[in-house]
Image 1 (tube, rainbow over the protein chains, first blue to last red):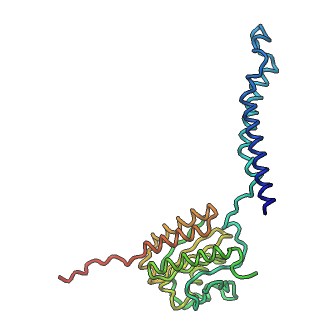
Image 2 (image 1 turned 90 degrees about the vertical axis):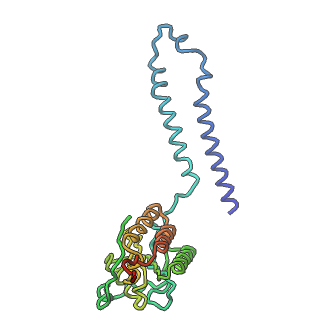
Image 3 (image 1 turned 180 degrees about the vertical axis):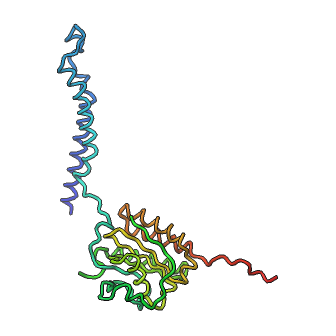
Length: 133
Length: 129
C-alpha cells in the first residue's frame, strides 16, 4: 500500500516536472537565440528552415504541450468507473417491508412466471413514468 | 452469484437509508429495484403487484442499468399523493445522475424529491357554509 502510494507520488512528480520543463523550455527558447533573423539573412527573406520551424514547429510544440497536459493525468490515475455501467450482478431489491415478496436481496423476479401472469387479476397501478438515459 | 452483486454493500446500505428516510417523511412505502426489466414497464408493474398488501401505497423505482431504463410505478393510493408530473421530475433528476454514473446519488435525488412532493390532492368545494 505504502509502496504503491510512493510510486504514484513519484510518477506524478515526474509528470509534473516534465510538463514544467517542456513549458519552460518552450517559453524561454527565444532568449537563447544567437542572433536575429535579419542578422543572418540581410535580404530580409526568411529561410525555408526557419519558416518551417516557426510556422510548423511552434504550433506543433503548443499542441504537444496541450496534449501532454490533457493526457498526463491518465497515466498515473485509474479511470473513473460508472456505477450504472459497472452493474453486472443479479437483481437487488431494497425495501423496508421485509415480509413482502420484495424483501432485501429478493431478486426472484426472473422466475418462470411472466410479468403478465403475476399481474393478472391485480389492479394495474395507475401512476408513474418511464425514462431512459 | 449472490443477489445484489454489482451493487456494493455500502451502496445497498445507502439505498436502504434513502428508502427509510423517504418513508418516514411521507408515510408511503418506497421500494427500489435494480436489475433487469425484461418487459420494461410491464415488468415493473408486475414487480409492484408482487408486494400485494402494500401495493396501493407503494412507490416502486425500478432501474435497469443494462438497458439504461428507469420505471417509476405508483400504487393507486400513492398516485393520489405523488402525481405523474412529480414522477417525471424525479425521473429527470435520477437519469441526470445516472448519466454521470451516480447510481446511488440518482436514487437519492429522485426518491427524496418524490417524498418531499408527496401530498394529498387539494380539496375544493368542501365548504358547507
